[in-house]
Length: 154
Image (cartoon, rainbow, N blue to C red; front, side, top):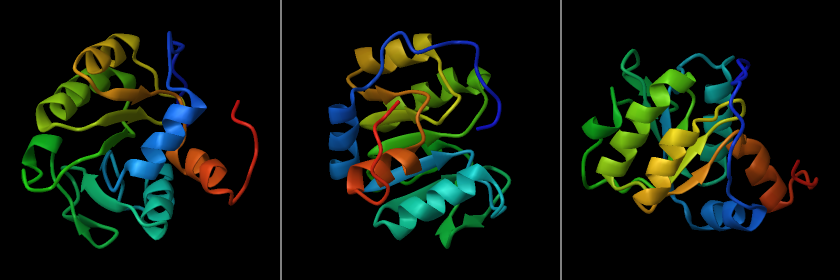
């Protein structure tokens, strides 16, 4: 995300925890996934899809993205679809509501993309048993983890 948050993560997932998330996740609900191919959310989701993850678009303005049906919110995704990761591409003011939906939906992880941090929502997610990653790009972390572009995590 181009817009930077003023908030810094009070605590964040370790590289080892991120590696575990990437290894075990199968289905990623991408909240704020644009149907425009020039948007970061689209590029990241396309990369993840090409690397074996099922992408569930969450965008009320789109009906389909990357060949997958788009849903207006997490609650609208059919219950038989297990969500491993909620990958967030929305402004910080929307994160608490998305985290609440992720908790209610039974997601295992909340992932706030690069530039996104919300410590209060993160604390609530952790208290509900979810892993939380903030201010990290899932594409960059996957490339590091999978060895495509090895580099140390900042």
